[in-house]
Image (cartoon, rainbow, N blue to C red; front, side, top):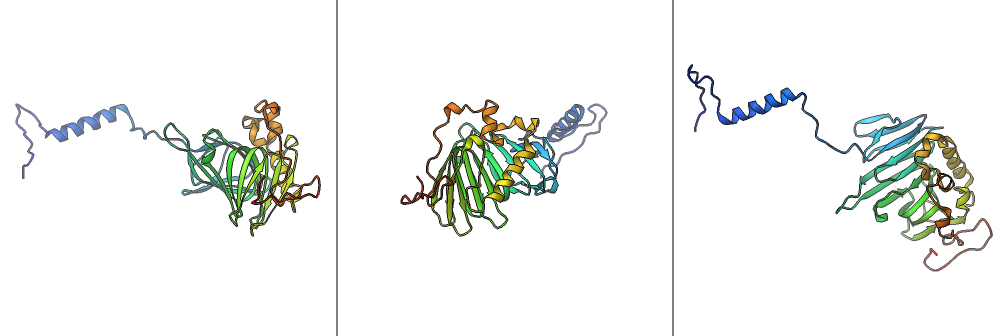
Length: 290
């Protein structure tokens, strides 16, 4: 095996083998330039724009309070305490309002880029949330609760999940496609709300989105309705107006983000087998939906 030797003769001085010379020069140049910088990387999937009281971010590194301007990463879980709320702004433009005593997990987030598909998967275990989609393809968004899976079709909608896993949804703008635990799909357009229990049974109602989210027409809907209004009340502050769609359709219109003249007609029929709060007629079209 060829060995490298050091030559200590006065005429030539200290001579290092070529690989060692290169390594030494590299280290010297880096040392002169200061500390080695970290590799560039994305800061995160989104940030908290508003924090009210007790909001915690749980990650693989542990649990810590989430502060305003704090970054969110894929796989993070956000938990809010009693009387607490948060406003989240994601990198794709999605806005989320999170109400008191809510738990949701950002299961997956990949921002859409040229030549690559985006992905946004959110699990909601309990509490209240309003979701306003961002700029990715609508097929990128999936919202899961213990009793439903929602496919987003360009929308502003509100979710409430009870402690036992029942799901309430009200669509203010756009359309949501809901699949219950039996695998049945229901189309829920703006102006319609739906209740899904843990057995896969559903019920529906109508409301006026121009007056804000209303779940009171659904079974046992007064409690969920109060939770959503508590969320909105906690977040109605100037700082929250940076993400006005997450505050609901009336606020988005008031802030000039949405032109009411461009909105399509609101729902005139309740989701399949649902009762309208404006009457006792039922829509029993075959296969559900509209």
